[in-house]
Amino acid sequence: MIHLDQAATSHPKPPTVLAAIRDWYERLGVSGDRGDSSLCREVRQKVAATRARLGELVGLPAQRVAFTSGATESLNLALRAVLRGGDKVLTTAFEHGSAVRPLRALQRERGLRVEVLPPAGGGLDAGAAAAALAALRPRLFVFTHASNVTGALFDAAALCDLARRHGALTLLDASQTAGLFDIAVGADLVAASAHKGLHGPPGLGFLAAREGLDLPPQKQGGTGSAAALDEHPPTWPAAFEAGTPDTPAILGLGAALQWLDAEGRGHLCATALERRAELIELLRRRPGVRLLEPPGPRTPVLSFVHEGLDPAEIGAMLDAAGVHVRTGFHCAPWIHRHLGTETAGTVRMSPGPFVSAADVRTAAAAVAG
Image (tube, rainbow, N blue to C red):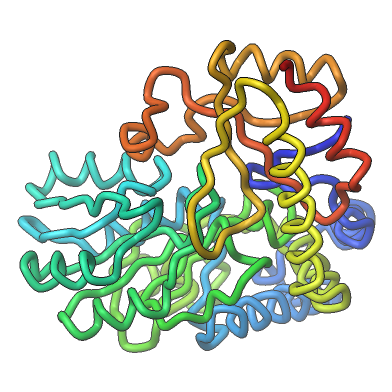
C-alpha cells in the first residue's frame, strides 16, 4: 500500500523506532520513575535524553517539556490550565478539532469570548492578526503552525511576536510541523504529537511551556516521586505527567529523534515537498480535479476536490489501486466553510520521505478523469 497520509500518521516507521519499542517490551519492561534498579536507571536516562532533545526542538529547557498521550491531550490540558472565566481568546479558522472542541466546551463552561481569524488569501494575514489582537486584547492566542487541510504554513515567530506586543499568551499547535520545520518560534506553549513528522509512535505527544508560566495541574495521580505526597506536585514536568507513562512510546520517540538528526530534517522535508510538487503537476492534467493550493510557504500536504465525484468515491478508487489517502473534513471543521468544501470535504494526499516518484505516478493515475 502506498502511504499518502503522512499528515495523519507517518508510515513506515524507521526500523530503529521499532527496535527501541521492542527493546522495552522484551528487555527493559519498567518505568524510569517507578524504582531504582539498574533497569529503571537506564530507562530514566533514555527518557531524559528524549525530553532534552524535544526541549532543544522547541527552544525550552528539558524540564519544561511534559509527555502526554498526544497533541489532543496537550491542547486540552493547556487550554484548561490557562483560561479563566470570562477570558478572551483569539484563534484561527485553520484549527484542528483538538483545539476547536475544547475551546467551544470552555466557552460554554467558563463564558469565554472566542474570536476566529478568517483566512486571507489562503493564509493568515499579519495585519489582520495585529488588528484583532489590538481590538480584542485576548489572554490567549491559539493557532496552528500549518493547516492540515491545505498545507499552508504560517509565520509562527511573527505571530508570537505580535501576540507578545499585545500582552497575549500564545499556544502553538505544532502537530503538522514538528519534525519538518523549525518550531522554536517563541511561543509560550507548544503542543505536538509524536506520530506525524517526528516519526514516533502514536498515543504520545508533548506539551512545552516557557519558564515562569505557572499552570495548575489538570490531572492528579502517581508520578513516582520519592516523597509521600497526598497532593499532586506543582513542579514541571511532573505537574502534567500524572499516571504511568507510555515508556515504550517515549523510547520509540527518542529513537525517531535520533533518526531525524542523522537523516537531516531539511532533507526529509525537501523530499516530501518534491513529491507534493510532482503530485500537483500530475493532478493538474486530470479532468475535473480542482487543487486547493495556498500561496506562499507550505507543508507536504495537498488537498483537492473533483467536480463529478465525492471525495469518498475518489478515496475508494485510490484504495482499490493500493493507495492510502485521507478523505473528508480532516478534523478541521471551520476551514471548509471558507474553502467551499463544507458538504463533503476534500481528498488529502500528504507524502512522506519514503514515497517515490513512481508511487506518486500510481496515485495520480488512479484519480478518475
